[in-house]
Length: 353
Image (cartoon, rainbow, N blue to C red):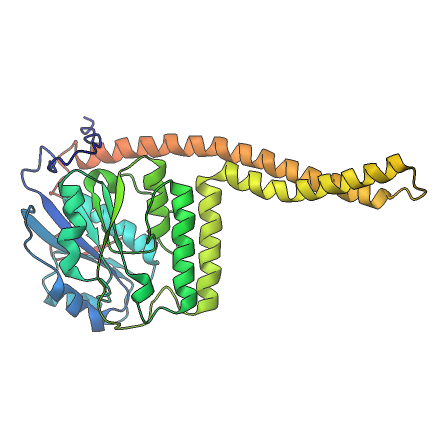
């Protein structure tokens, strides 16, 4: 039996209604961890166990192959769910494991935060409020990036550049796309598919925009600096990965525009060389300038081939959307249509993914 369809988004504030088979509203706070023994305890101490509008709050930690006492700290702090990877899989896979586990555990709202206590847990009520009011399905915490002292000028610029690219690709207006402090409704979480192995932050926003999900942002506070970023090991590596991520985002979600722009560069140069050759030819110069004509033909052919590739990629994107719709229906049937809510996942135990 297929699960019920999510309530369509309406711009008018309406109270959040949990799934009919789940009488209460459950919030699960997820924390991906990799060697976070030193900071996880402090982060967990700041998390709430009670909030207005929420009947039950649970914590979920994803141990991404940690080699320290991260799991022991989580157990000592009475974390409700612990998912363990035998080896480090990366932030994106840890995030998706958290989403899948939270959905199986019956979460109506999912909050994701970092284990380094970067984000102020006291802002969680502000983060989930638009979801409770029915104003949004995804809420991104907007950090005061320009005021964060330990961010280098290059990193601040790249953060803003990444957010600008995401706004173009997703048709959204999220000022801080790389922020990991965010909240999702159950319906939104079911629709995520992260292909990038480096990070999930940019891709999930673009998917939300492409699928027409209601997404907004709220200003949040950040805590003091406790440790260096695990994603930014060095500025050159961060720049390289950011550029690669941005290009891959455009190729995946805006293939026609990406290849049209890319193909226009050699085509325009080739066309200019062709016009130049034609002018010389009409003027009757003695030199034939055949090499220029050959180069013009090659460049124009390259541009044309990139345009064709864009058309093919755009058609493949349509097929991807159909597969995502099938996957969504399957997830709803498994999680909501067959008593999957709240009955799966081991409380306080470790699961192997």
